[in-house]
Amino acid sequence: MTALPLVFDAPRRGMPPRHLADLTREEARTAVAELGHPAFRADQLARHFYRGVTDPAQMTDLPADTRQALTEALLPGLLTVVRHQTADDGRTRKTLWRLHDGALVESVLMRYPGRATVCISSQAGCGMACPFCATGQQGLTRNLSAAEIIGQAVAAAAAMANGELDGGPGRLSNVVFMGMGEPLANYARVRKTLDALLTPAPHGLGLSQRSVTVSTVGLVPAIRRLTEEGRNVTLAVSLHAPDDELRDTLVPINTRWKVGEVIDAADAYARKTGRRYSIEYALIRDVNDQPFRADLLGRLLAGKLAHVNLIPLNPTPGSKWDASPLPAQREFVARLRAAGVATTVRDTRGQDIDGACGQLAAADSVSVPSVALPMPAVEPPVELGAEGDE
Image 1: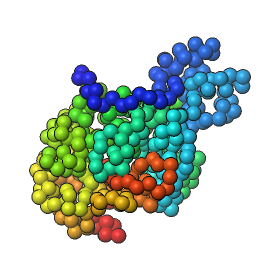
Image 2: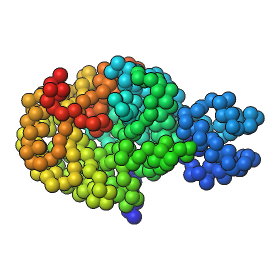
Image 3: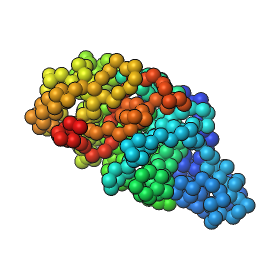
Image 4: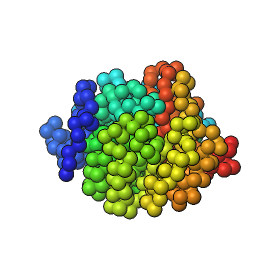
């Protein structure tokens, strides 16, 4: 198996203390035993963690005189809420988290009829340097630990169970790695997070593979590794341009792995898993929304097990980038569909709280200049038509 290139290495400063979610089940049992407690206490701790229980006093199946010591040793608090912001009549909530070393990340919980999706971050900042991405312009602070990533999903599941979003108690049904950072640049910890998301309770959240989406700008060796390891989660590729000339500018990693290589890797994933992959394409006025580029994209994807999600650029104050107008969107859709490529235009949640696709900047302030990259959309498509005209 090919090792991931060193270019993906993130700064290691500030990594958090050991947490049960960073360990395998056997490692956790060994750690508990080394602390002088029966190994099965690790399973009890896991049950509480994945239910979102953080107060030792609520862990009544543990002896009262051991709760504090065990939680401090294996369930240290890694994520502290700085603030919640809500939008969409209380159905969308963005959370700004402060990590133990002061780094800031964001996650977004979105409730839809019959489902709830959380968009989680895998890095503090991002090293991909896409020029129209709010997170990318911050640079990379560090990779998140597996426990820090998992913790965002666990908190979202607890929020749904507790009825913290409009609509009363519910269930977290979907997780998308489309928040801050490039997930496949933090491969080992994202892979560990996938295990936790998919493992049945009480040792995980018990989600289905179809309900988990991993996004990437196109780290080809990591896509191949994910293919080899046999997970059948949904793969989303943030393409944003069908030609190398433009994509070299919009997505700088393209200078290393070209469009053709990225699509070849996605095709191999589709063949191995039988799962259709998504091509995420931010429509930017007069940059990548020309009819000839729609034709290029159509020829690139014709006959492939792929689906295109077109995402009009989300606004950010001070950005020189703007969303494609509706006529250009319609033309782009028409040309892709004429080429036989399944295509949808996505609705956007949380724009007014900078929680929509590409607006996550994780600033401890409400007025931070940034630019916007629409992250891959995360929910069932809204067809460009009567609803899209609104």
